[in-house]
Structure formats: structure tokens, C-alpha cells
View 1 (tube, rainbow, N blue to C red):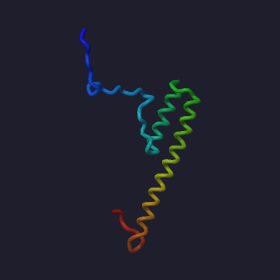
View 2 (view 1 turned 30 degrees about the vertical axis):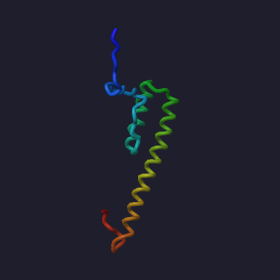
View 3 (view 1 turned 30 degrees about the horizontal axis):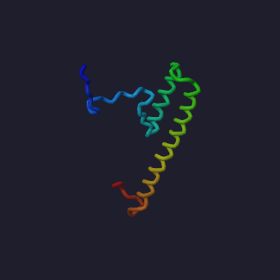
View 4 (view 1 turned 45 degrees about the horizontal axis):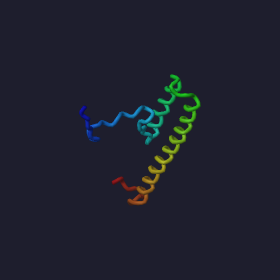
Length: 93
């Protein structure tokens, strides 16, 4: 009986199950979408209420943190723009 040899390059990576997929949570809107998905899963019985509650809490904290960081970055840009120019304002470069 002949042995079949398979190289690692010939094997496709398996598709990760939904629980292992990479979820983008870089913006408040992306966090909102994940909260909506979590809500739908809890309503459909796919997610236990205690797990959904914990995820909602973590997502809420992440949304607030993302919001604060976004405001900080925008404020810093405004402050930098106000330092230059004849009237304290300089157009963005």
C-alpha cells in the first residue's frame, strides 16, 4: 500500500468556527454591531444570558474607552492647529 505524502503548503487553513473569528472592535460603530450580534444571539438562545451580560458590560467599557481616545486624538489635532498661523489657526496639511 502506497503512502500518500502531503506538504504543508498544499493544505488549506481550516476556517475558524464563529467563536474564533477575529472581530474588529476598533470603532464605536463596530462595537455597536457586536453588541447587536450579542443581543440577537442571546434572544435566539444561542448565548446564555449571564454570558451575554458579561459581554455587554465589556463591550460597553470598550465603546466608552474608544470614544474617549477618539476625542483625545481630535482635541490634540485641534490644539496643534491652533498653535500655528497668524490668527492661531492653521489649515491642516
